[in-house]
Amino acid sequence: FGQTPSAQESKDLCIPDRMPYRRHAVAEDYPIVDAEKGRVYHRKMVVEGCVAFRHAKDCFAQLPDEENRQEAERQEKRLLERMRIQSEGNSFVTDAHACVLQRQYADAAEKFKQASLRMSHIEDPRNAEYLQHLSNDAAAKRTIADSAHQKMREGQLLLESREDFQRWEDVVNLGLPAFTEAEILFKDAGELFADLDQHDNVAKAHARQVESFERKTHALELQASFVIVVQPSGDYAPQRCDASRRTMGYDAAWHAIADTAHMGVSSTYHTKSEILECSTVYLRKGLHNFVDTIEVIRDVTIRSEDGVVADDCKLQIKEKSLLHSKASNVKLFDVTLEQLLGDGSEDYWSGGLYVLLVTQGSMEAEKCFVYSQRGCGVVARH
Image (cartoon, rainbow, N blue to C red):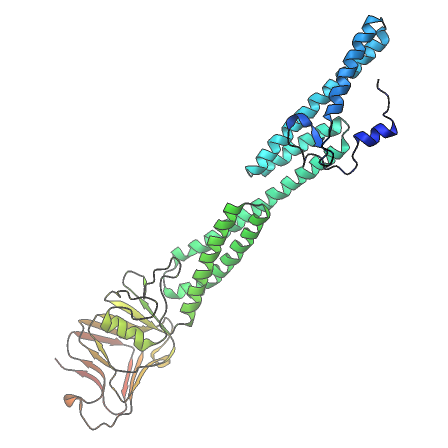
């Protein structure tokens, strides 16, 4: 007993290229299974050795041979202690794998480390090294998970910044960079979650990434729009049945003013939805051509965007009149209104050209220029 195995015995019992623990399926098979030969060893060897030493101890006791009996007993206790430590290490490994599945990576790293220390104690360096690798891997997973969740939190804060927007310009000036950064953060978080095989969190990150992309696209649409309609409720018009892009800027001022001041319903190809009375039409800097006279029958405010003066925001129509107001309360701020061309043969009393005609209600114009090349500027006729 206690002799060094022969070369043939070592060859039969040892498999140099084994992968410790990874193939471990049953607690009694500590800790290695030879997948090719189907041979369970190491723990089996210890158990058989323990039985052999116990039998030898009994035999020496019968001789009697006290010295060898004590040695056999010592060897039996040594192997029993080895089995205890093996079982303890195996328990740590089982708990560590459970922690990984529950995404408790810090606990998993510590349990793998404890198992590794026990393998070192019983002089099983290959398993000790492998378990230390698993401990390091769990610690790395924790770092990855922390980074992914941090990116999710930062991205969510950027998305929620929209709650602080006060004006439509904020969507462009503040929202566009925020949503662009959020999209990148959610994309990175999704890739990190994918590395951890956290498919549920991958789906969440993807959903937030899509929302960020939609809001970014919306901001880009508003940035490219020539006119924005803001309703008294603060909502933009036209409304859209979309989770992230609730509106769409108009491409033409004439179209927006006609929908807001006359139709009361958006007529864009995106959706047909009501536009509340007393809405405000914000015009971007530049020249806005009208294609036909607009009859204003709903209260509305028409103004240039913040910081733009009347000289830089012009509503212009050729050969026709511009606005005919019949609403109770129409307001114009910081815009230039022009009527060009036409034959000029008729005066305004008999249907001639005009820039503004008020036949009902009231119209207020502040810091505005009114110009007609061939007709009248402002006509009030009740």
